[in-house]
Image (tube, rainbow, N blue to C red):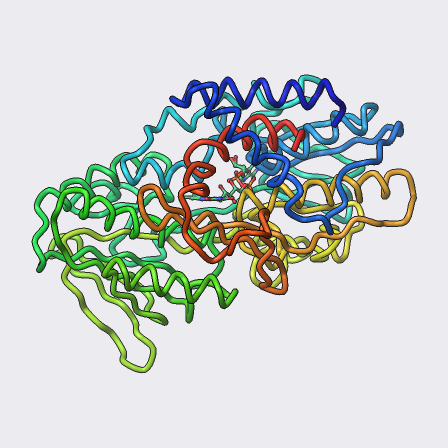
Length: 451
Ligand SMILES: Cc1cc2nc3c(=O)[nH]c(=O)nc-3n(C[C@H](O)[C@H](O)[C@H](O)COP(=O)(O)OP(=O)(O)OC[C@H]3O[C@@H](n4cnc5c(N)ncnc54)[C@H](O)[C@@H]3O)c2cc1C
């Protein structure tokens, strides 16, 4: 970034921070952390190259990843023709904020922006969906706009929430009868409604269940965060209840120090937890959830509130295309270069990719620089140099006012932005970063490909 771009970014961040209630002085103090956070992964090559070549680049999906890549290309490959296929006019909503909404801290409008204000002006936006990929012929078929060809294709179609994968659950049930899910944008405020009812009527024998499904999900931390926020709300109301977190997984984090700390914080806050326990069905009428527990068979539990995390998968056009996707349905790319294993003019980024790391916006913030650098090398016929090391981050809310910033890479090694702080400790400073800094950094740093 040149000096003007840094100043622009700083101005946008200060405006956003003061709009969210911080004084200008506090906003400037918090901004002091930005340089550290931006240099989190020195092994990732930041975008230094540019190309003057012309190329027809098609981006499918204009959410967090697609929008960021579009802005990168617009800046660094100025003669490229960029086309984005995205049906949603609010596709770049700040999904991490859905956790804050579910905990009663933010409102839906706090995370909504118009996509048109974030896509590059020189890109063509087609409001449609791709129904078929034809990588052998460099073509995609859309629902309403015919076929489109490309020189280079970027797949950024995100994930689909499969609520129906749990018997008795559908989207319509979220926000009724003690059922919540922060994974659904329209369900996040309703989830807070159900959690507040639970907290208001809490007694020690009342039960809140928090589930986590099999398979990869976006932000594996979010199911725990909403359990911690519910526990915080109970303490705030000076009430007691039974909180039980049940996950299909065998641990909370693959990184030992983060896993150990999460176990400690769950114990400190009296959240009982069970590993290898998978939610299979819910009887909403009788408020009974059935879990399949390893070695114990089916376990029926009565609840007063249940938080559902649906199983997730790529969209149909991706997962049913065996040329594009691997056997699990992810766009099958090399984990270091982000380039497709079979088609060297196809890239994938974000939640739909097979990159074997935790699926987060923080990961996209590093992936787009590698993808962009390698795209330029491909266009110019040069050697590929950029390598993604799997960096991802989970700001694990453990209390209102406390966050453990779990940052790690493909090796599950801690990759802390501030190496002089113990990364496995909950801190107020990380709460400030989560509650104030990350959202403006997402909208005005990452999405605009400035950071
Ligand atoms: C509750 C929750 C909490 C989270 N917390 C955090 C956090 O604390 N930190 C963090 O870093 N990340 C967090 N995340 C994860 C982060 O938001 C996602 O990883 C990120 O948004 C993924 O971006 P994406 O572009 O891959 O997918 P998306 O942003 O979902 O975009 C995919 C886009 O593709 C479009 N699309 C789909 N199919 C087609 C098609 N066939 N044709 C054309 N377009 C299509 C969709 O309309 C969509 O706009 C959280 C997510 C949730 C839901």
